[in-house]
Length: 161
Ligand SMILES: [Zn+2]
Image 1 (tube, helix red, strand yellow):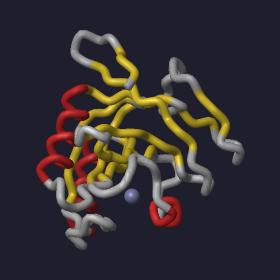
Image 2 (image 1 turned 90 degrees about the horizontal axis):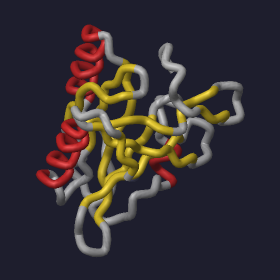
Image 3 (image 1 turned 180 degrees about the vertical axis):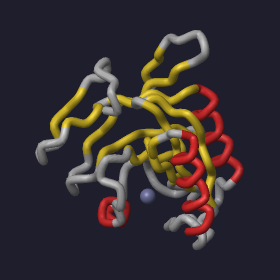
């Protein structure tokens, strides 16, 4: 999308080709990790900016419910972040949130609540050892479609996770 041609694309079935992979800079991955571990007792949430399928910034947003079972982004912080993205020439690449007591898979509520059909939904959860990890999905059609997440460092080599 956005003029890049080097992304592998898939058809979600409603005529739109979407990337089946996005790339997250390691510092953006780290910013999300930092946020979900800092707010480990509640669902952390936030926005990921990007250009051409590669992340450019992460903004943590307060969860107005402060709950381990649900999240809703604080509206004014969400709008501020989106205005900043717009002013910076960034797209909204992904929305992340965490499941402190669940797995890294969209809940029925997550699928119902999708407001941005062309944005990747990133879900953080803990593995059996308590370590946080993340998975990505397209949810825009009502189906749950996995998206490959690549981590890129300054050195340029992508590493699938
Ligand atoms: Zn969720």
